[in-house]
Amino acid sequence: MSLSKNQIQQLQRLLRGETIAWSSLNTDMRNTLIGEDLIIIKTNRSRKSIYVPNAEALKMFLEQHFEGLRGMDWNSEYLLSSTSRAELAVNSGNSKTKEIRSCPGFMVNSYEPISAKLNGKDIVIAPQEGTMLFVADWSHFEIPKEVLVVGIENMENFRRIHEQRYLFPINRPILFVSRYPQSTDLRNWLQNIPNEYLHFGDFDLAGMRIYEKEFFKYLGNRASFFIPKDIEYRIANGSSERYNAQYAKFKNYMPQDDKLLYLFKIINRYHRCYDQEGYIDRHYDQEND
Image (cartoon, helix red, strand yellow):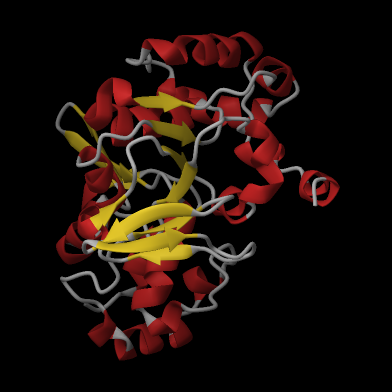
């Protein structure tokens, strides 16, 4: 697959959070990104448009599959004004774009050792702090049914789970999971196990919508959205800019999960949102060593 200057420009727009027309990307690129679960399609009567729910995941995918895009400053005007590096180098990496994903699976992490099975063999999930474990053969990955699975949307939060331990004073084992690289593998695995799933994402309309579309729709009452006790205070002092930026897209959104109504009302009462990174407490882990 080759990328023209126009295609690179459209991808840059998506990475900036813009919504583009369905026809702006060529068929091969659209199908590839749909297959990787990297774009969301919106339909307004006869018109289709595309937006990206997770820009970092798209950026990671593009840089993994197109050598010429690695290290690019996607926020600069360089890609818009010049084709010399981007177009020439992108073609040299075409062989890396495959129909079959070369790296299926998802990442897991934990505070304490968790016994599990992989292909019928006993394993222990116990990553050293500062590391994480990637489960590639996810369809043969089993955990005890009493383990609570906590999905973390943001990679910074996932990487620094020890600094958020105060958020989960739960007397049961917790397996933290992340759907990086972006795919449906994690959701498919969750559908095939009986465990409860707790979603930890951004506290905004987009974050709730992602949870309902990607998880609650498939897991039903086994899934819930993590709402910290102090969320009203946090949102009251959160970002009005992000709320305003999202409002046009989500103004007609109404949660299907009744457990989200409290959070939904708070967000709309204050017209503010709050990023989950705000719950990372770098002093907590040091104080509890």
